[in-house]
Image (tube, rainbow, N blue to C red; front, side):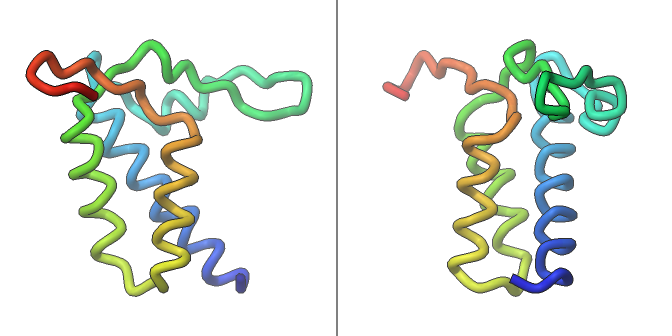
Length: 100
């Protein structure tokens, strides 16, 4: 992956996180969470993602919308999605009407 692609992917992922936290309960400011995050023993920022919830369908919609508007390869689009799933996104809200 080129440095340009990595920068582009980081920007897309940040935009996704901003949108996810903005639409979570309670609404959050991802940039403020990052700015105020404490560091763990490895120097990684700790985001309190368990304090935020988002409807699973809305999560998917936001993720798909952001990834679809890129001109990245399917491999890189999948890499972004996987990174978001495994990253510091808000936890999913239990949908009473579906078995999620």
